Structure formats: C-alpha cells, structure tokens
Image (cartoon, rainbow, N blue to C red; front, top):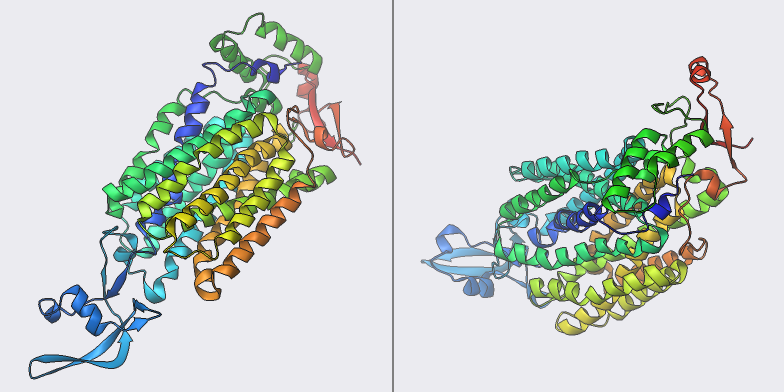
Length: 551
C-alpha cells in the first residue's frame, strides 16, 4: 500500500512550485476574465458628437445644454436635437434623432473597447454578450482540459493551456473589429477554463487532509489581482496596452511549470506505477522525509497488485474515466448534481458582485479596490473555516448571507457610495469564503480517477452562472434593482439548499476510486484482461486492480 496522504502531510520544497503557480495563475486569469470591467466600462459617459463645423462654435458643455435632450434627469446618450442654420446662426429643434457618432468622457477612461467598436446605445448589450461569450469559452476549457488532465496528466494540461493563453493573448492585440476580438478572447477563455480545474486538482492531490487550507492561496492570488487590475487600467488607459500586459502576465506561470511535480495520486490511480515511484522518490528527497524506503514500498505495491516493473497501463485493461461516471452511481450522482448547482450559484453571485463593484458610483478604480481590500479578512477566515469548520454549515451560511446582503443593497443609490461599498464588501466576503470552501469541498467529494473531470464539470456549471451575471445590469435597467436582487437571492437560496444533500468531508481521506463512493454499485476486484492482449498479460504475469460495475 502506497499511502500518499502520509507522504504529502509535510509541507516542503516539493509543494512550493504548486503554491507559487496557484497564486500567480490567479493574476492572468483575473486580468482576462474581468478585462471588460475597465476596458469596456458601462459607466463611461458618452453623447452625440458635435459635427466638425460646430467644434469651434460649441464647447462640450454648451453642446450638451443646447443639442442633447434630457432623459430621466440626465443628458441622453443616444439622441440629439435636429438643427437648422439661419443667417449664420444655429437653431435647435425639439425633434430628435439617433446619434451616428459619439464623443466620450475621458475623466476615468480613454481608448476603451467601447470606443474602438462603438458599443453604445443599441449596441451596448454587445459588452455583456462579449463577457458571456468569454464565460462560455471557459466552460469549453473546463470540459476539454479536464478530460486531458485525467487522461494525460496534470502537467501536460497546464503546459498546453498556458501556451494557448499567452499566444492567443498577444493575437488579441491585433484585432480591430468586434467579431475577431471575441474569437480571440474565446481562445483565451478556453485556456482560463483549463487552468481553473487542473491546478485545483493538482493542489488537492499534493496535500494531506489536514493541509487543505493551503487552497486559500488561490483566493489570496485573486484578491491581490483585484487590487492590481483597476490600477493597470488607470495607468494604461488604452485597452491595447492593457491586453499586452495581461498576455505577458502568464509567462511566469510557464517558467514555474518547468519545476512543477506531477500528481503521485493521479499516476497511481491511472496505472503509471513506474512514474509514480519516480515522482514519490523526488517528493521524499525534496521534503527530506526520514525512514521512507520508496523502493521497498513499491516492491510491496507491485507484489500486492501483481504488477511487473516497467509494465505500461493499457486502455484495454484499465478502463478510462468518463464523464458518465459522475452520474452512474446514486451517491456520486447526488454529489455531482449538488456541486454543479452550488458552483453555478456561487460564481453567478461572485461575478454579479464583481461587475457591480466597478459601477457603484464615485471613482470606479477606488470603488473596485476598496471592495477587494476589505475582503482580505475573508481570506483569513477562509483558512480557519477550511481547517476547522465543517463544509456544509460554511457553505449554507455563505449562500444565505450573500443573498441577504444583496437584498440590503437595493435601497441605496449611487449617491450613497460608502453604504454600497460596505454592503458589497460583506456580500463578496461571504461569497469568497464560500468559494474557497467549495473548491476544497468539491475536490474532497470527487474520487481521484475522475477528480479533474468532476472539478471541470463543476467549473462548467459555474460558467453558466458567470455567463448570466453580466446581464444583471440589463435586468436592473429593465425591471429595476429590486428584481435583479430578488433573482440573486433566490439563486443563493438554491445553493444553500443543495448543501444539505452532501456528506461532510472535513478531515476525511480523499476517495480514490468510484467504489469508495458507491460500494454497492462498484466492486474493487482483481481481473485478468479478456481482450486480445490476454495472452501477453498472462505471459508477463500482469494483473490489474480496477473498479467494475456490479450487474
């Protein structure tokens, strides 16, 4: 028996590359995911542009007062009064028409995606559509690269996704129309989706049950990225320069990948015994583990499982994991469905609050930064919760509390900036605590053989929530803030309800096989290959341990 949990209980140099990557990968992920918050801000004011012959005649303020009609106590962004020239003088009529070109307020923003592609008035929803498209790409990355991670390993999945993120990130800089811009961003989003599910699986598999609070490093990376993002937009007001910086921010991840270990749990679960022996040998040496004889450990493992050294796993012998395994057994099915619902709700609320924090009123850079800064204590609380508090009550309180604070935001307008900051911070803090706990909760619930696919499916579900979140702005504009808040609170309640159907996993061993979750459905047995390779396997004395479904 190879007890990986005991071997990874000590934190040492072997885990450092994993820790560094889970922090630093949060920055390019956040920069790309929230890119449009400042590169295509809904709060950038605009109005119908002055005709060339009027630029010298009218200042901006004079033009607004005379040519722009007032709609709901504000100058219209999309209409202009018709005008006539009489005896060298301009007379503005009460009749209006739609704008054809616009001028933009550059107080906080300059050359944005909105200005580049004219995403205003009847095209203003294109920004939300672009964000939704990006979230859909993350969903694709979750599905595709989760399968790659479970089939070919965590390291290969991370390498391919990092290269994709860097290359397509730089290609985006050269896009000069809305559609090519979104195609390129879709490629980036696939890489983002791959990163999210794979690195979390690797982290959980490199830690013991008592050390899983280290997962909060991901939240720490996201929080620091939230404080960096608005000020890069402030210092680089041109979206093109922002995109160059964000594409380059993934390069350090590529350097760290060189030193990244492969998951010993995955190597053993997938039948790569020789590679697992090598990986665990490095773990023992780097973490200076005493009284651990790796050679003897694996000699006993091979004897117990009738595996010859140098034997390679075969697809025909060892069944490859499939997404259907997430729903085959009754217990696994309940776990999967509940976790998918919880990820959907958590991420919808997360991005709804994040996008809201950039348009609360006042200075958008300070508003976004304040919310990020004030949520730092929640990262510390997350560590305590992951180490000492049961998962189910943590998630239940997180969902209900987030929904409650969103409802409390309804009466406060843009002129009550600090009240909005405080309530948004409290909602985001509770949601953030839930996000950290949920990542660990999900990793502890899925067995090793399908963990990356389980996490990938969870992130896929979360992308549906993230895809809908940009449209809360349109919902609030159409039906009012109270309606948008009520929908958010209802989704939070659904997430809270889902926690009640999951088993508690605090300080429990990670399940490795499907039989660990559904022993009535799967049986762990020794079986000989019964395909065309049977003769070779018998000759080599090979037997394999696998999980088969009871019939």
